Amino acid sequence: MNYISTRGAGAGERHSFSDILLGGLAKDGGLYLPSSYPRVSAEELARWRALPYADLAFEILSKFSDDIPADDLRELTRRTYTAQTYCNVRDDEQAAQITPLKTLGIEDGAPLSLLELSNGPTLAFKDMAMQLLGNLFEYTLAKHGETLNILGATSGDTGSAAEYAMRGKQGIRVFMLSPHRKMSAFQTAQMYSLQDPNIFNIAVEGVFDDCQDIVKAVSNDHAFKAAQKIGTVNSINWARVVAQVVYYFKGYFAATKSNQERVSFTVPSGNFGNVCAGHIARMMGLPIERLVVATNENDVLDEFFRTGIYRVRKAAETYHTSSPSMDISKASNFERFVFDLLGRDPARVLQLFRDVEEKGGFDLAASGDFTRVKEFGFVSGSSTHASRVETIRDVFERYDTMIDTHTADGLKVAREHLQAGIPMIVLETAQPIKFGETIREALLREPERPAAFVGLEALPQRFDVLPADAERVKAYVAKRVAGSVAS
Ligand SMILES: *Cc1c(COP(=O)(O)O)cnc(C)c1O
Image (cartoon, rainbow, N blue to C red):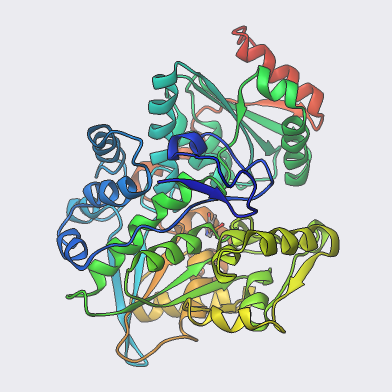
């Protein structure tokens, strides 16, 4: 398996899965994709139906990472996808499934269900990929005798998923910037209560954008980055995308009885990472009818799939919503899909994403390319705070099921794209406890709290407060990498 850049540079070079695992963008600013998608045969699809999650993950990942010995990869997937790790569910039988499917009912003739992806350690779907990444990083670093210092900025879900995936891992430290006193009490406690010596929580005196600016400033200091072995785990990481392909197969098997059937998926979307994995599953041959992209008020992606116009918003034009993990104005994985949509033409991708930088977007409506969006199964919709609250209330009353705000956006949009006889699977991306304020508004009651999280906010917290100053952050990191960890 060879990986290429969506912008075409280094076309003659070879990049294996392990080569691109620890890196970010390709050197021309493009994103890595396999030079062609592996196809799944009818025989394989039939055999995979009966596999437990970890073994299904092995089968799918081995098609993309043929440079990792099969025995090692099987061990990694079995260690990652265990019932103990995905245990925030009602019973052992469900925990063993890792991503259980919860049937809601039949609406407009379509069986409607939720694929539960948020039963992992941080109660959001990002655990599904990040937990694997932690084990893959540790394995790869040990093999090459290297170390890695992950620097990131978070407003909640990504940072905690990264910390819980990397805690205690050999050769890895995590430096996570978060805005001081700006996250919910639950999210703060989730991150800051970690006592592992390789995890460093840095509370920045500023807002999330300040944290992101610091990460950018540090990343642009190439000498510092190389000397301190700085890396990232952001959503463009290819291993994260490919790990998410697995649950589309798992969800398909759970919702169907034979491989002749087709299903649709609705995906609450921000950076387009999750739904990009659905696109890849479809390209591999999974019988997917529709991929429904659901956005919140930040509807850049919905606008594209309705009109063919991709118009990114400035940070100041990004709304702060009650589904905050989708408050994104520029979808970092979208380029991967555009590459496929344009028949894998890197020169055109390069031009279009130059237009994004220089003119703020591009318009495919006039060209024939946009009509192909339908061939790829894509449709979309968006939601608002009012529809989110209404959906949470409706699903609770009708199905006795409490859903979080992001999943509510998915369900609201899924209902606009139901087709009789075709199961609709909505990806559940977080647990309601993470977004308690909106649950209280919708249901006038407290969100459900998984047993392992009782008393979380009372645990001792470990973090350091720093001013919003990249130089201070660099000094903090350098001191700890050098081994003098006293704060
Ligand atoms: C990250 C996140 C999303 C958006 O996923 P993308 O891969 O960025 O499209 C949706 N919901 C929740 C709860 C998230 O944490």
